[in-house]
Length: 384
Image (cartoon, rainbow, N blue to C red; front, side, top):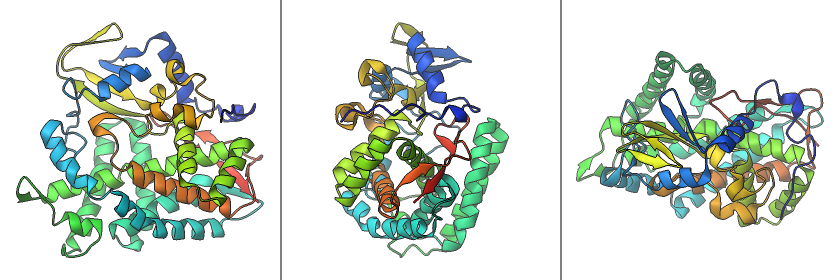
């Protein structure tokens, strides 16, 4: 199905914060490789796809600290990736669907009807935090702390100040250490199971366990909430897609729902970019990138490349699925794709099943996230 959102779907009233997608679209049209401040940004679909699938040239060892498995390459990455993937199998994901559905339905039931709903604060963030807490076997009492931390982390990231982001990260690590101190490693929740994992014939170190848990939560909580904000905004402003997804949700058509979710996220991708560093000089689209250069793989820009997607704002889930890079590609493709898609599908299905319609809220314009983020900071809607 092809559908172009109706006039007004991009909310001109929300233009007080620049739309990062428009800036990236314009930059990509000039050249698929941009060089600024010592960093090379790959914006074209072909360029991002090639780099993501060439880890020998575009290394992931870019972090100041060893991040597992994100900052690893080759055999070392594969060894830790094998551990992470054990927690993301189809069976593991299916086992979490019931608790995700219960949380989603409870949250939707408590939302007001006929008045403003703050999509992020009232729906997306509580769902992300509560489902993650239950999945990982963490205390419910941490919800308020995690919600506050997500807000501070977002502000620190926007500031671009290393000391500020490091302080927020250290606070999160301290919380993880406290959680691990409260477990004896005998439980069957993922946190306890990680405490029993081995790599290369030895137990994971405490630092390695904290790194994996940080990867699962510190970034994923915000990403899950941002994705729900993008989805609800699109549904509220595109009645054709909302009607179709209501039909698919009623029919419990998992495949069609998840394909639609992937396409909406392609149009407005909240997973903006990943970093790499070159191990040799390389030519990308006629631009010579030297060895040791910082490189950004911009998924948001690549997913809107008209050379591959045609009109990037057209909703074409079938036609664009094979080239969709929302969850990345190559050896570092997101191992949690199945889990995240299930969570998004369950949350959106509960919202559609629990309402007759989702409208934009006329009294307040939505507000986009400021760069380097993408998606929405505020998505006011009305439910009926």
